[in-house]
Length: 209
Ligand SMILES: [Zn+2]
Image 1 (cartoon, protein in one colour):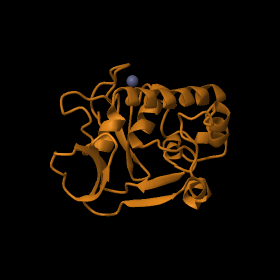
Image 2 (image 1 turned 90 degrees about the horizontal axis):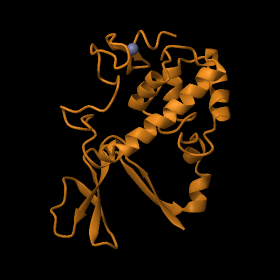
Image 3 (image 1 turned 45 degrees about the vertical axis):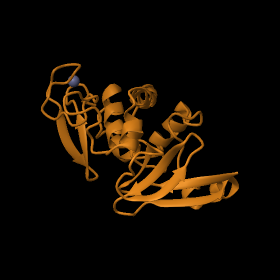
């Protein structure tokens, strides 16, 4: 079986259009689908990469082998997650963003999962108790399920990825980009800090330790 390996990089995206619809900007590759639609790969900055290879060759690619399990797959077990935590002295937030440990958790999901589990993003990963580690494992999966249900992942991929997932009036996230707003649990003002060059949003009261 042949597979198409895609790395979107900065501005690459897929857009689905009908046969008679106008093409989007920067239509570099056009796939003609069985259902009379066209899937257009558009990439303003042209950093994206597409590669056709056999599924066997895919499994042997070093970049693919280095990737950790995705949180919604069976192999992302509580035991796997807890073992990862115990081995790291990095802050939990930074560990959650390490794609060689957990795959596909971005800045937003990491902040939201820590908030849901009521755990400080600054806590050293190896100091988390087993009980709280399991809570975080569950929170990660819940946040992703929630996002998929809300259609946000789809919108981010297909549309503009500028962060305005649901328009300016309706925001989905509990802490992300809510600095200065009251916490939905306790009313304390949400704070923003910078960790490893990325913004972290948290409730200083619910996520004390
Ligand atoms: Zn709170």
